Length: 249
Image (cartoon, rainbow, N blue to C red):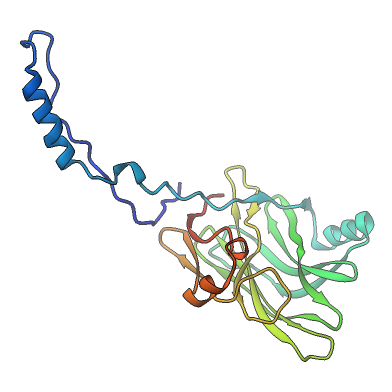
């Protein structure tokens, strides 16, 4: 089980001992004095302790397993008419992750959603988010992709996207991140796609100034928004995943 690296205040309960049944009846004046002393010693904010942050939600990949990436793509084309095109290919995800291989794909029809295909000992799986459009002719394109080991058990897939208006009078860049690992049954699970960088101008649901930090040792993720963006954005526009979260598959 992963440990969450987040600041907590551990408050020790104060106790003055317990009374045995053979003790003499208590003195009301002494009891009142003891209560007042405990009240002075006890932290005044004990009732507002910060709750343990929730682990980031993960889910099973959307399709799989298939014996090959070609079989996976053929299934998508047959079942939904979706294209299944490589953005980039890696012969091996990385020696230090539990995945044999990984492929970053575009899955969709007129528009292409960023997707990730992963190979385990059980076969090939794929996941994507239909709302995370990474390719649309004349408007959106993928600039670069990257696969990296965030730890010996976590693979990160990142996508750098360029958005522009038809006449290029407005444009912006944004980055997407997906984190994946294996659960106790050896099945691949991934987080949702997160915006980890966003520039003003893009007509997408992200807030400029969003940043992401990963603690390699403790496997804790920290999402934050810079002060200027936090002040200018409406509360409903701020990412719901802001804060520190342990990651558990």
